[in-house]
Image (cartoon, rainbow, N blue to C red):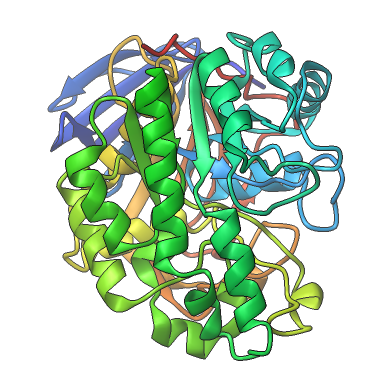
Length: 454
């Protein structure tokens, strides 16, 4: 039964960057009371969670996923992807447009929003994909509920989702509103490098082929377009020290950016060990890049942490490099992974909230999300920072049934994931790591609304 009435007592809440013990109430899906020190008494028709020993965080927001729906249900769909998100404490996601068919117009976006309404157990938003000639389609979805922004692939991707000629990029930046998110790799250099490295079959060559300069050229080009046209720009999945250091001095107020959990965790040694499981575009790079990304995350250059959840079957991966598809699952492990980094001293729990909850909400103007504030939506996760589980492939909810973090001991697993005051997934600390789904598809979760961006 969906009621949205919930009382959480005795948790350690992350409020305003500090940890405070107390109670929190959600009424009809909205946070209605926060009581540092506790003292809230149960009311009628209210679910009560006694949460001593657990940390209460806002529900995480993953603004970069590929849930493969419609078109590739063997990899993921909006139900399985949303289930995986909920299992990981993610209560809202933003899904990319490279589907079959690509989401490049109002009709395809309306279809995805309709599908999510029937399948998802979390809140959801979608990007519209830019092509060389669909500016009128991009304009037609501006301000539409459930549509978060425009995605431009400046380097080769799926179908007709490649926009690399200057005149087409200028047209999009000059004649659209909202936020443009760019996959920043330079197509000309990319083609040149692929031809040069075509004889290499060792996976280490992937980062050499799709090198830092390939990414840096496109990042600078996108930044120039944003400034020339006074247009909000978000650079997705930043991977290199060179880009991050340049953005420190050059991003200004128009530009935001993100980093993936895997680029904060893996380096060249992991690529050598894990092989095609960690093959992605742009690639996992080097130790010095990883450490600089952490520095730029901490100093505010990087605005949020994402996953680029891009599942492929292990069967398709088994062909080896370079024929294996690029991408890996990650939405259900991202919050425990970052909280593990926090428990290992890399950052604080409040930092994780800033990067995975507050940051995405701010970047995309997501209304009433990302913080524990009276009047905000009751999207929450209660995590256990005292217990570690070692995750294996069989513990995952993603349809492809594997994780690049298999064999890693992670802490911070959500004991409860809550959407609009309703529990959608829960775990018993004595039970299996997968936990138990609670909500049925389509019973909770809705299309996100976005504030106009200046």
